[in-house]
Image 1 (tube, rainbow, N blue to C red):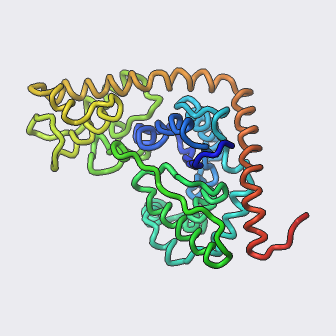
Image 2 (cartoon, rainbow, N blue to C red):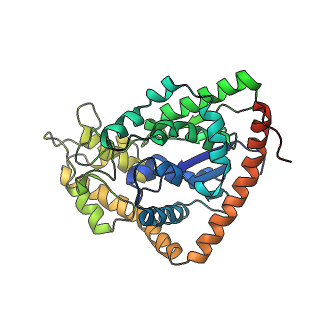
Image 3 (cartoon, helix red, strand yellow):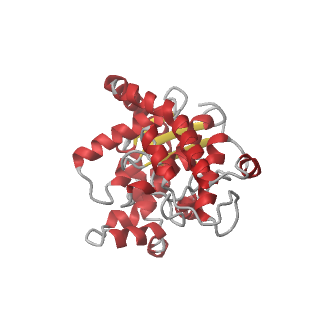
Length: 332
């Protein structure tokens, strides 16, 4: 790989990506390939911390892989693979679990949230998966990790684990830094704009999926919750309009002042329609490319097989050194 900083990121295969996933993370992954060495993966091992239908999990994993490519990740420029295909993640996870404190894991916000949502299956994997997330990153000694605001806590834990390992066994791991977009890092629900947009929302109008067709996208934006003062401007207390302006700004590249000027004297209906059309038109090439890739299963298999081979070669060197540092006997 070229002498550039290394970026690592993964995404769970829990169905079609939301507009929030796209704006906050995946949209940036393609452009980053020209500035950094990039390693991306579909983290199917993380997905099973909550119960999954095996058939759906396999399909969602394949769809997620194809979607990443449709969104601009080039397997010729990046290492793009499926997490469970690369054994070093699980191998390093155990070492890192033994360097992670119980108290640290118990403070993880997502563990608390998911435990409440799935009280019948509060399993050990759900508790320790931040250590696996750290292994995903540290297996490649990544410099940067593109994360949404809600994932910053996990990255901070990965840094703490790496620092603790370095103190015990000598400097080895790079302490990864977050790569966060200044705007659009968190897209909110269209129906409850104080909550993050989520595909698990019971209200289908709350969430835009990036494979939604144009009519569906526009209809959902038309139904977006706003406020009663009818002025299109970004300010405190206007959560719905602030969210729509953030989305529109991220998609069009226009700043808030330009948006306020563009829609001065116009109503919320005009603005919602404009946001919906801009988003739908922007996502059209993604939908087209996803359909093309999904139909070529042999090509997808070639890509994820080669991606896993590259990831294993890269991470095996690092994990072998970790094994030696902690005192394991060499296998060869």
